[in-house]
Image: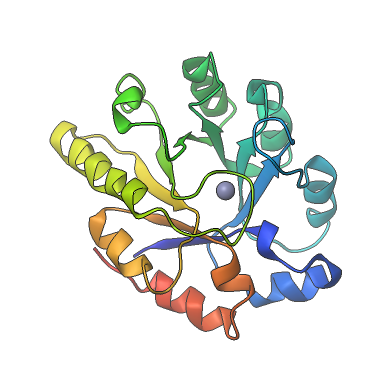
Length: 215
Ligand code: ZN
C-alpha cells in the first residue's frame, strides 16, 4: 500500500484549518522548508509547525531545502518530525546528518535533485531509512514532472532488492493521480503530492486512491 504525504506548500493559507481537514486521512503532512538560498523560494519553518502542534495533526515529515541543514535537524525533530529529508547536494556531511537524525529517533531520508545520479548515494544506501527522488527542481509547487528522473526509482528499487536494503523510496514533484500508479509499480512507496491533492475537487478520493495503490 502506498503512503501519501500532501505537501503543505500547495495549501491555501487563508483557510489553513479547512485545508488540513481535507487531508486528515493522509499518512503524513509534508513540510517543504526552503530558505531562498538552497532553492529559489522562501516558504515557512519552525513557527508554522509550532502553531500546528497546538491542534490535531498528522505525523510530519520535513523536507529541508536549506543551507546547513545539520543546524536544524534537532529543532525539527524536537517539534515532532518523524522523518527528516536532507539533500545530498550542498551537504558536505551527509553521513553525519543521517546519523544525527537517527540518533534523535527520527527516520533519515536522503534526497537527490533531478541532476544528481543514484550512484552518488552508494555509501549511504545501507544506512538510510528512505531515499527521496525529486522529479522537479526544488522551489515551487505545481511544476511539471520530469519523467527521466522517475527512472531513478527503478534503479533504487533494483539496488534495494539486490542488496537487501530496507530503505523506502519517496518521490516529490509533479506527482498526480495519472502517474502515481506507474511510480508505485516502479518501486515508489511514499508519494508526496501538492497541487494534485490540495487543488483537487475531491482531495479525500485522491488520498484513498493513492493509499490503495499496490506494486
Ligand atoms: Zn518536498
